[in-house]
Amino acid sequence: MTLATIYTARLLYPGDAPPVEGGALLDLDGRITALGSLAELKKAYPTTKIVDFGEALMVPLLVNSHTHLELSDYRQWAEKAGESAVPDDFVDWILQLIRVKKTLHKNQYTHSLANGISQSVAAGTGAVGDIISQYPSRKAYQGSPLSGTLFLESLGQDPTVVCQRMNELNMLLTDTHTGPLQLGLSPHAPYSISAAYMTDIYQKCKKEDLRCMTHIAESPAEVEFIEASRGPLADKLYPKVGWEYLLPAASGCNPAGYLQGNGGLFSGHILVHGVQLTIPEIELIAANDCSLVLCPRSNERLQVGKAPVSELLKHGVKLAIGTDSLASNDSLSIWDEIAFAHHWFDGQLDAPTLFRMATLGGAEILGLQQQLGSLAVGKLSSFQVLRPDMPVTVAAINEYLIAPGRTAEIDQVYMQGRALLSGVH
Ligand SMILES: [Zn+2]
Image (tube, rainbow, N blue to C red; front, side, top):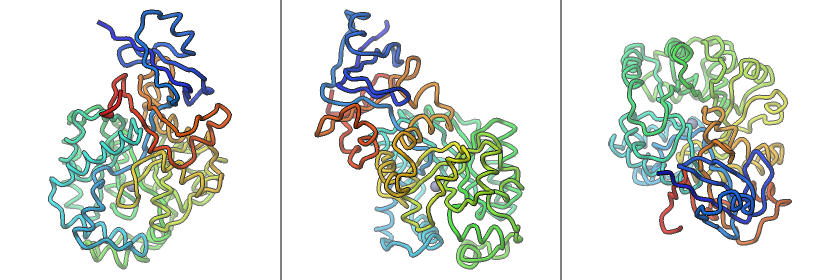
């Protein structure tokens, strides 16, 4: 038996088409099979059940293209570990993260990841590019409504450890217990993984068509380390983790050049941050069809700088947006991230660009554009219902979408025609 429902609200914004006053969609078994005005859909499907959200907006679910949901309990962990102070800089933040992680039992990550999944859904997120370092905690995704890619993170400079980790990765990639998420790989960052290990992972991703994600050009400390093998990462991080004898030779390269030298610039590779990218690096990234996820609130928190968005747009780099983890952010809401980004980049990312990065742009880099990213016939009946205090006009929709306060207005989240938030509808 098929189940059909017409969903309607005073304003429906498909994302990739203009807003429709009194817009409606027909959900049939979790897919959108018709889209138009309520009058049109009622005429075409006169006996179909109607759910009318009244003075609300229906908009697509958002895509959090870069996060680490396993760290969602970070604030509580840090408090318990007596590490509530805000670190002075990027490297101090990494050291704090390492100290806090040392106080944890492995099973705490599963709870934390489950918490992150719930917070994401409640914030209107339908898909994630999520990084996981504690692989067993991935079981939290079983039965989760989120889709996207779960990137298995790797790091390490010691060849013996690296070899063991590579074997573990090969085993894990045959695993299917990650709910609707696909598995991908993530060599953490150029400063935290040996060139040989990084190259192996990139080769594997290219050969087996696996999605790949790498943090790159996040901080001035990283740029200095990659080029000259010195600076606070060499002086403070390496001795702390026992890698002082494994310092790589100075490459003389910038981060993008270093990635290229290790086979890391290839079509579909998802880079994250890019705060310190120079124009020649942006040209290189664009020419090799890599995409970039911006995480502005995390960048602001860690004081690593501001991504060169005008240049990125000018060179046509595919952009998406992410919250990064709750170790460097206050919320997992992409609505909050968009509002911050608009202000932080001083309007250089306008509302349509930002909303696209948060929806279709994210869906495209995660390979989900046939399912999510906009409300269109053939895609999933996955959308959110926002209930603002004041009515939003068609003319004001752009301004509304990038203003602060949207997260609190989420009234309901539907995935494949199923309401996920309890207590309403
Ligand atoms: Zn990250």
